[in-house]
Length: 179
Image 1: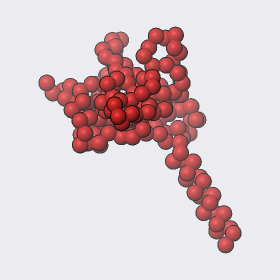
Image 2: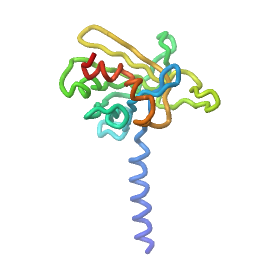
Image 3: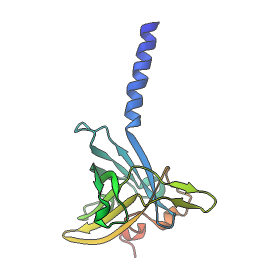
Image 4: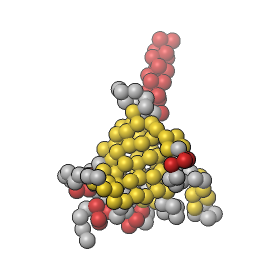
């Protein structure tokens, strides 16, 4: 009986550690509105704990046929960089444009995420604290867009206004090539 209990506890700890290495955050705008995409980050890479892999969920809230792939590293942005976001976190690339196009676009969405969600004040319906994510969009040697805001400790609902707000990388209709 003791051996069986030890085995169950060992499996629980091993499985628990695997689940504990994944983090999920929704993205909120500077005005506290949620975007339809969210990040699911896994730190259990065979390459080490500083490598991040995962996906940017586009199917649940955005209506895309597929999710985007995330790959990156733990990193930081110094306050001296003058960006609206700074501190320790993770920097990753996402193929969000390819996922919406369901093919190769040549465009890249690169994100820094602080890996810590902001507090939400239900009385004001606003997030508090400093901004906790920033993304830049580029193709070839041209940066064509950026966005930043707060991290949400949850995922946006498909029924919320997040669908009309689109993704962090731009409006869903623009990503799908519609005008």
